[in-house]
Length: 151
Image (cartoon, rainbow, N blue to C red; front, side, top):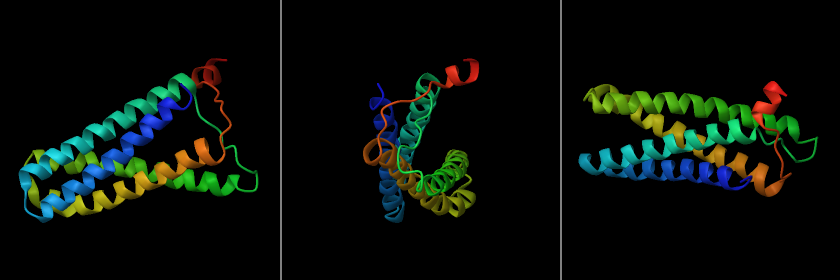
């Protein structure tokens, strides 16, 4: 369970970014129907990421950084940057999809490219956090969030 949920959630965010890239290519080719389908799938995988991430955090808690103490301030700064990007990217994604569905295309066209770049950066930094926590410096334990709150 320790590695399955983080691996799944990280995979979902990477897949979401791939769908965004494919959707971006299709809109450049003026293939609106395929662009729409691909961006919906990007949203589905981003939502799956969020559900798995939230479930993992509630059920298992947070994974502490297992690397050297000398790198911890850099990791925490990078993690904060990723969290801000993910939050901004998520909100921008919802707004961009909403404007697309409501046919507010001038707004959608203006924010869409920026949202895509933010989402790519979110996915890249998210995969990097996963790499640092579970591959480079694994510690194989967490403290469940509920235990941390109520224990």
